[in-house]
Length: 67
Image (cartoon, rainbow, N blue to C red; front, top):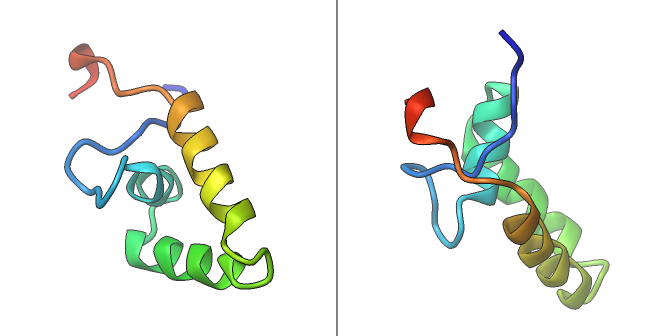
């Protein structure tokens, strides 16, 4: 079965991007969130925030048939 990246429906704070990435790689989403915060600092927050919302718009929701 092919592994696909989806937004998380149950592990989300804003849109489920970090939760979905954590599920895809099989790691705790808290580590993804911490890495995201550390990447926000050198971009003065603007680049990271824009990247988050672009990811939220591009990454699809999991189809109901795959639950």
